[in-house]
Image (tube, rainbow, N blue to C red; front, side):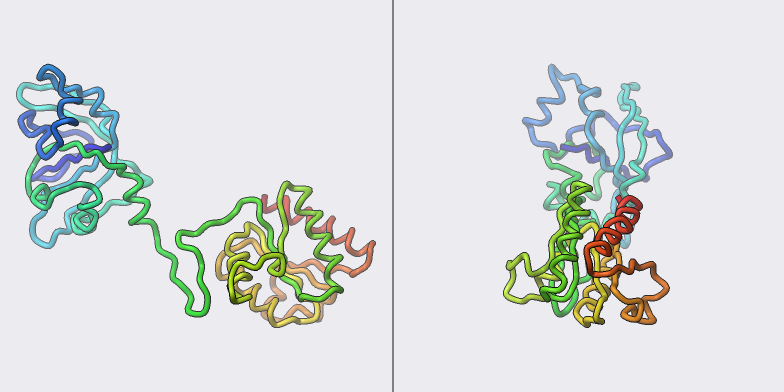
Length: 278
């Protein structure tokens, strides 16, 4: 539920007035009776609701709309004086943008050109979150979730699908488990018909992506590029510095030997990286 306050002259800085006769216009009768008992408006209850401050629409419809909170309200003759603050975490909108959401917010067209104070039985923040959060640009060859969904305990391992890397993968799982995380690689899951979609989905959900560049596997380099493009914390590991291509050598990487002692050393080095991320 939220307050919709519309003003013909726009909203002043932090305080303004509204005629009592305009309160509850375009408000459902049951809501009006709840907030107006025995003919008296319950201001304390009203100001507990989030509020939309809208200037009447004219011209191109680019007047500014703000979301905020009424901090104080009192009766002054035939008016109600209000003091309010805008929510700095919610960017301003134009009337045109709000008009596009009008049906979801239960705002009639003519309300945009009428000074009044209405109360709407709609979850304001849910509508704004669903419609105004930035949209992710979708790639052409695979899908990524929109909105973004990162699992805070998921680490993914990108490495060649070869038995010689199984012990390395086990070491990565052990270091992840030590931090309350779980490490997976694409061959652990079969959720999509295309393997590349499984890989991308795993990367997109991960908080950390570990890419083993050993052997210069082209798939791993492709997956490292996806992880970088999606903004994931990415750790490069390799058994040979020669396997790190020139374009990635400016990034920190971890070199290891694929034997018992080398994998223990790898886990020690990864602990330092994990602690800097977590």
